[in-house]
Figure 1 (cartoon, protein in one colour):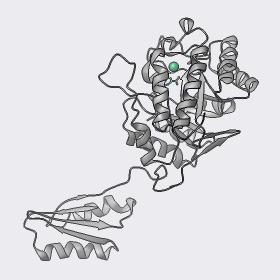
Figure 2 (cartoon, protein in one colour):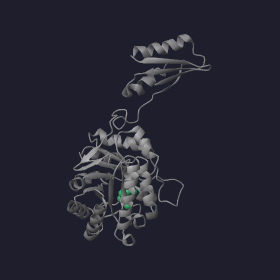
Figure 3 (cartoon, rainbow, N blue to C red):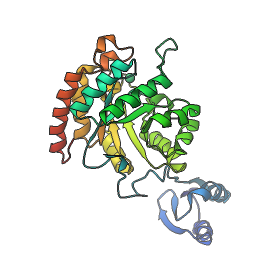
Length: 340
Ligand code: PEP
Ligand code: MN
């Protein structure tokens, strides 16, 4: 906490405030400026800061008290200096090996999802992505095959020996989606849906938490804290692009969010270059940049016939382009001391 005294505070005033801090068991650091004196209080617990700040403001010599609250604790690297590695069967997310999640934006048919799964697995992806419950900005857009889509994803992933990541949008669907998926995805539109975050926090399924399209890194980490507070510590962060004034790309990929998260948190972080750019032609470059920047993986949309996709065709790679990207990612990973 920082206590700012009014200009003109006397030595006696300063001592009175400092004494009251010592009585509470805090350390003090007094800094006397020309205009004002500022006292730093060391050792207050977060839970008591708001109340103590109000009490200290009752001293006539105190102008303002700034309680410095850490916005998140469980997520922070300070709390857990050894980085989290999330292990799901044979896959480790956050380790030396970079993980690649790939698949269609939406599950459209059995043929489509089996075909994509076979192709992305053959190219080296270990996790099959695909939406069964589709968030759609337009209420007239495709909303997904729901339960049938979940079953198709599971079938395709099992056939190829892959894991499944898929989005859950409604707290009431968490048990259903958890029944089919290995990783529960929270979409950008739901990053601040605290009921949903709490619900997935009560499961023991890993969660892929996308960054809100208009959220700061701090808000994103606070959303992760919501999940972890429920006892579920298996959170993977995903930068998927944020809204800016730029219109050429669908979103603006914040590559700097990757090293930022690495500085602040112990959780793995991946990048979604598909929703990040909205353009298939730009996906490989941004995926390479993500791995070069230290991301623990990427999630990429792949469709056998992007021109027929019900959703996100313009940003979906054809299987051949995805296979070529995997080769490039292996080279970038090697250059930064990792592997694909
Ligand atoms: C998706 O991954 O299919 C998706 C809808 O992503 P986002 O929530 O990032 O838009
Ligand atoms: Mn999509």
